[in-house]
Image 1 (tube, rainbow, N blue to C red):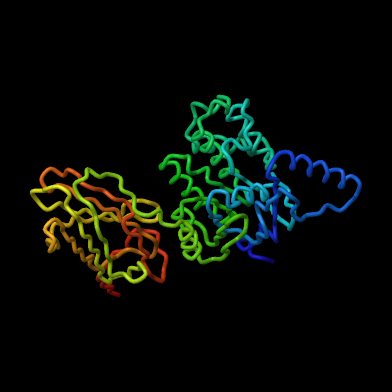
Image 2: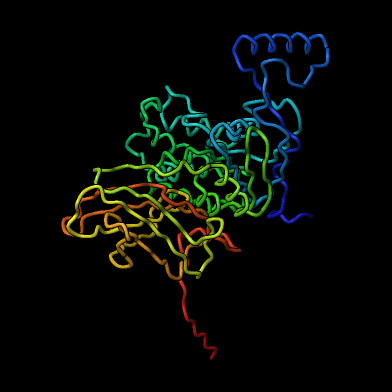
Length: 399
């Protein structure tokens, strides 16, 4: 007998789903398909004029205790695939086998009757999953407490905010302990405290559940997923257990937007920027240099302070430095060269960008600020989901 933890709950084999590009062709093809089906005529599953594949040839298997992450840009086909898996759309090709109770949180308010209260919707959702009234009543207090909307639980759901709907939807899906849990990007609507609470609950559920998770937050994906599918135009560009590889491919699809001047008071101008990096790649623990030559358009009493800010792939500032030294006056009297050596970088594997600004050393007045002045990759073997990894000297003693 199979170990319950390894029980196969989801099997998706070469699943495809197509849509029409306009309403007229959609209605036309829909009517033709109904007529052919009624007459027993085989329906052509290939693309017809004005149709496209929203999902094409997606395959994966998911066992109890496993989590697969679906990533990709908006319009890649992630949400469509979830709706096919949840039975909202019928696949045009392929086969889907889902075993057990399915809980889904794929759209705000999906599965809720807006004119019923939150409490009544809990009963409705539970009955769909096959729970008895007694079983729901045993879980009711826990669901309401988790959702943190006790005072609004007897108010019609149509009056709920988006955050309240997410809270109630997740509380129901999680506490009814489904065999398969499907979560779309809706968790992004919740506040930080509730999101952390949700992930704690997911940690509790995961050993007994197969989870399909969609998010644009790569730290979230890497935290809980052991498989990943990178989708692009409906197809799987990468599918496997190397989460780092899938994430790097995802980020590589977003080209650098180029430097962007966000403030300029016409005092300074960057006339050159240089780096000793090869292929814009930083190697951990290996020093590298950034050199900027700045032309002064106006007389400045003191040399401006250079400020560098490093941001990770989530656009979060993770490191910075002020440069008051390593400055030399160019042979051209109206130019300044900032020669900066970054020592022993501890960035972890990933993609980073650098913003830059110049300011007055006396009153911090900003002369010039430029975003995305440099973009670089940190090489490495392991994907770490912290901005940088500390070094230490360790002594382990065995008694």
